[in-house]
Image (cartoon, rainbow, N blue to C red; front, top):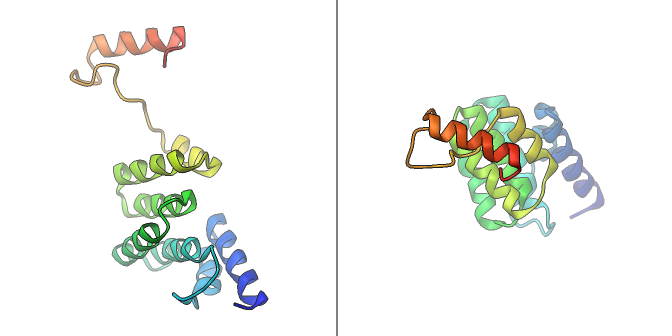
Length: 149
């Protein structure tokens, strides 16, 4: 892989992450499956995100990104891209699961920002009770106040 292709790969990933998906898609379009570069699967995931954002082809984008994640399951960047695709497709709970898995892999700041922007809540103190049950509400507030949650 030439120096130009590697720089194109890095710029394409950064543009996709910034939201400039049209340029990112153009830069990442010629990816080759036999690429020796270690960030190939991350680039494939971000190309999938560009595909979802620009072409609204969620089925193809999810399948392609999941394939990249299967090949490189230790990448929080792929989790971030897949989480963004799920959010675009309207699959909030799947996005949260993938993003939380990404945080288990690595403390990725962008995943933290995305999770806080979509407003996830902690699970209820007592899972067998409804979230709106007064026991859960009171106990959750008490635990938060004393620093246990």
